[in-house]
Amino acid sequence: MDDQDNPCLASHRRCIERISQNWPAFLATRCDRLRHGGETERVAEAITEDLFTGVLDWSKGDLMYQVGYADIVISNHLAKYLVIEVKRPGMLFPGRTALENAIAQARRYAGEQKIPSVAATDGRYLYAADVTGGGLTDRVMIDLSSADAPVELWNLSVHGIYRAPTGSVGSVAILPEASVLPAQQELAILVHPKYKLPAPCFAYVPDASRPATWKLPYRMMDGAVDRKRLPKAIQAILGNYRGARVGGIPEGDMRAVLVRLARAAWSEGRMPPRALAPAPAYQQLALVLAQLGLSEQMVGKDTEDVGSSGG
Image (tube, rainbow, N blue to C red):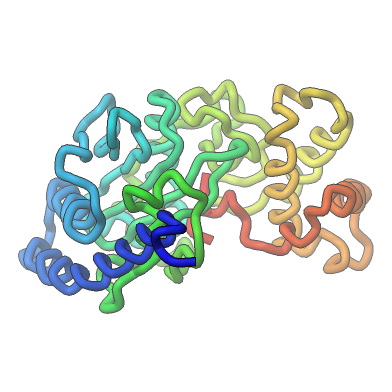
């Protein structure tokens, strides 16, 4: 099959060539913008514009600034595809809390504008994901200072943004929370009025701008799995799973929620076969996943961990 028979293949090839060709110039411009140190958020916005219009194939007119409370909205032919939350350089040193808080802000604005994807960047790191099933599906997680051109950027291109993410999303690792810079704790976040937790701590977040819609808390404020709430969240889902709606969660989103909770349990060693004597809630969850053919997805990375991704 040649490129004429597969327009997607052709656009993918052209995009990869463009990324590889333009990456060195982008790195040089980025270094020039950051040469003084202590730069403001506007510098990170300029770097983001360089990335989307110089490395990728968006036009300057496709980037809209300060739409509602959103820093940048990426659009094309009236359709809005991506909300980008921009922080000043150095603010998204990739610790869990800093990145999840920024993404939570982006999700609020995306929910208000019905935009399907979100991103956060500080001009050094860029994370982007689709909002699906009350959670996140990774698109990219890259270091913008990398000497190697990140071909994963195809997933944010004009012809890649509306397609399912392909290939690797990048290799940036989330650092231990002790490594996070103190200034990052200044980020304001929306919390649930009852649980006093932000959106990433819930297994189902259909609208990040409305805490009343958040369901099934299963993480603590620091992002760690809440071992007391996790089995309760699982039991709440499985109590009457076959109903059309379970606790207000559409049945179409149930699989994603089940996998999200199972991955958290797996990471804690609570799921069989990792657990020698798993509690009944985890045994039942493992059985349902097997019946639905989702057991292999349980072992993957938790889609509620930003970059590893967040909610």
